[in-house]
Length: 347
Ligand code: NAD
Image (tube, rainbow, N blue to C red; front, top):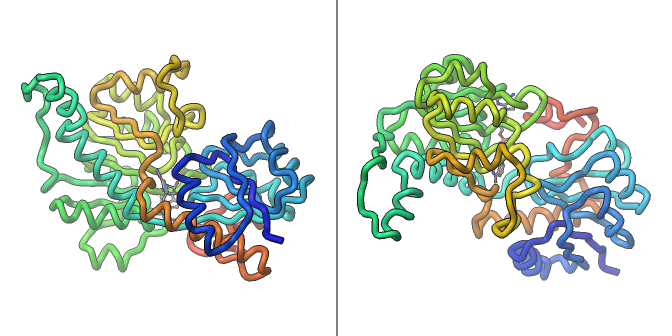
């Protein structure tokens, strides 16, 4: 009998891409609109696997319910796994993910945010459609010759560096595990975070969210930055202390912010809330700034990425049921996401 997958938080585009790729796998997929949380986890009853996404809750309560339902594998259809409580998953549930599906997609979106905020195309779009052809207030700057600070030089960070070098930007990089050979080859420099903050005109975040990086962009970090700096976050929302960012924007220390992710995004992102009021005052405040561009966690959202996500996710589930080596298993031997895991799994 075909293995059954309970597919949480299924959007129309997920259904299309997974249904197409599933022709090669023939799983029995139940697409569920609901987010995965302690109230919905029981919907996985009579299934063999769960498929979840970035804003699903995979905490102790959920893992207990899934374990009782005899679910042995959770297939994350994303790269990040900060929403999983590994202490509870340990020994019970295997967690697989899609470590890379298109670093180009995310890097290109980060570049799109930079260009929009710099040249204010998001404002120009509304102006010209309203018959306003004035260019007052739309002044930008040449990217050429400016300094980009890239935090996290993994797959996505490196793609973005290529793009920004193409603009003629200088690149300062910071990574907990610097790739010095790469830096030498590309003519870029690794530096301390303080030096990066001091010199970068644009700062873009591409490191994972973990204990070390939570709220790394806080009031102290912002104080060290250049006046007028542009901050781009396509990593994870909680890399940024949003109230501190708002203070920085109000003080004009931060000149612009492009946010594809937001710490409290799970209530809003991916959903149509256009006929409701926004009760999150921090998000509402962010949306009032002309120099803030919020996108709804869409950096990954390209045709190529969706294809690769579906293929790798279903292949991860197949590997599990075939009893083979789980190449994309998230390290679960540690109580918490560990530093080691960034370079090699510790099991
Ligand atoms: P990656 O694992 O290839 O690269 C991450 C890099 O961060 C590595 O070089 C690692 O050494 C470095 N790093 C680890 N800890 C660090 C620290 N404390 N300080 C600085 N650097 C540190 O990952 P990737 O594929 O490039 O993805 C990066 C992040 O982007 C993911 O963790 C995920 O949260 C986010 N992401 C967002 C989207 C989106 O749609 N917005 C899509 C995919 C990934």
